[in-house]
Image (cartoon, rainbow, N blue to C red; front, side):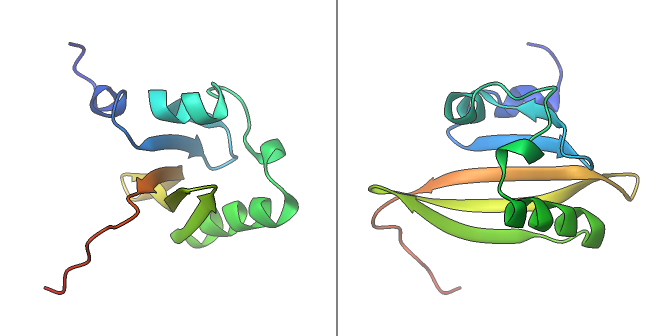
Length: 109
């Protein structure tokens, strides 16, 4: 096995897409590619409507996190978009898309 952190995410059942600060996709795991097609090396901004492009730019500029849920048919997902950093410098965004079970438990701890 190649000693790369990306290998740990290649086949998990969570869609992971990583982009740079300009919206160029630098990594997609298998699940993300099965949903969106292979966008590595391409710019994702043209795939988004204007309001989404503005959100992406704001997240990068403000180093902010955006979390929401969506539903398509019977499938509900949580979308978690957050910046990634190297030595304290923002390098882009990571998007996790996680399918939520219909009856997901919630615990107060």
